[in-house]
Length: 146
Length: 484
Image (cartoon, rainbow over all chains, first blue to last red; front, side, top):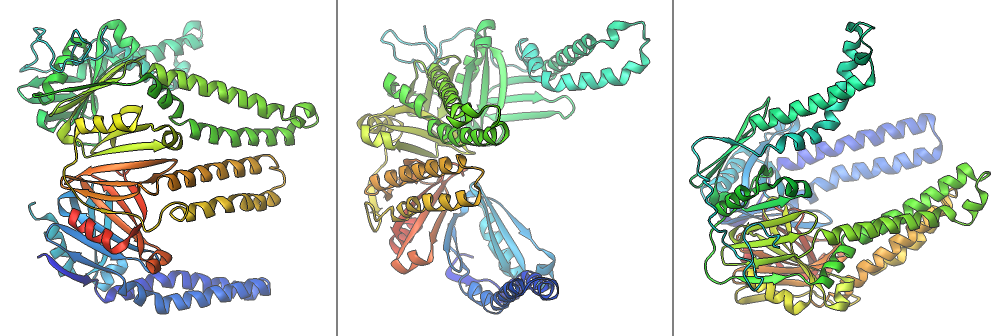
């Protein structure tokens, strides 16, 4: 159960991030079209820059974010590492996990992914992009009798 | 005269931990009601709700009342209805809210529409507090607050002696040596002046400037002299100063004869001010101790400490005292074991707080720019800018002064993290097994230079979390994993 080797999320998590990033891309594309049709050239230029930025984000960011996100299951605690620009490491002792929750949004259900939420006395810790087996294994480890 | 409810004082003036036998029978098989004083006190609290409700009922029923009955159409009737509703609420609460202490278990039943019952073993009780407000003292009653690891706390209004005996029954009995401490008068005055004083003044000054600007824009023709010579500002400043002085006096009156007694099993805190309070905390429930030093305290060697219990319960131990006395007091509550290792910041002095000093330099240019964008706020924006710059400088000063003490120290039974939070330096001692979460953060610059920011969350307390900056990353991570 406990495994000191860093575990990554499912590869489909990159697709999920890409889907989330498509929303600002569509919005910026819509703004660009409106700017070209109705607004000034300056606004069109700003819309173009924004759209180009969103396209670059959709192409490159998911892979970079996926590479920098992993978790490690130790016997008495869980270590979560994430963050693209600001790196964050969370250490969660097993004995202070009050309960665990599972969340699946519509996009996650399409991709077959799960988000495990650990409820601790200091707040909630989310671990998205897990497959069903990994999520149940993690929950079992956290909820096992302490 | 003794204001500490759990016990009396011995001939030498020390607190006596165990309450004497007063002949009151506490173990009961049936539920009993609280003190009758609960009726008027609950009625008073229900008045803000019952008054609009009574007005509504009065308006709705007015059409059904004959015009000849003038009293029922007057506002007096609405007032009588309001009092009636409040009294009825008080009576219902008194009838339905009952309690029972049987063996080692406390049961409380309450609720009118939604009935609730609490059943808690004395081992699960973390702290018990008795409070006697001036009204309670007049009628010989006391509030008894029971706190467990649940977020809600329970309260009972009982006769004084019953409250004291019940509280003593719910807490673990003490054995062995006890240590008694009394707060110093100077420390109490410092605490009264410092508590929220800076926040109070920082918020009031821009507010007064804003009023000055608004008055200037609206009433310049009529009150030109007053506005031109900043009359409103200075009058407001005097008023704020008066309010703050009253706040300080009130805070000081609340902490008269403050002291505490520590034993191996429990901690007894007491004050005898406007309200008499005595708070008994189970030592086993303490998850962290937070020591705080302001900039003034750094200069004058004054430190204050607080106890953190789970679920965000925070209790002040004693007001600012000298460093030597603080070490003695904390040792009486819990002494830390053998030191295992320490992690110190990668830099000290001004370099340690370089980011904060840079923020100070940028405050005034930013506000100058904002002032150009908002010319109508000619007084407010500069005042906010200077206030912000002043607070930022204070923060940078306190960080610089405590840079050499910052860091993480791991002991055999606890860990100590020293860092800056707000306008004061804190040392958080978290006991092993009470660390709920550890967060380590690295921004791109920190990743390049090899340091990180560490934040520790004590069990059940987001408010008590503390950060320490510029710690070496690998060593910090290794120590944190060892702490787990």
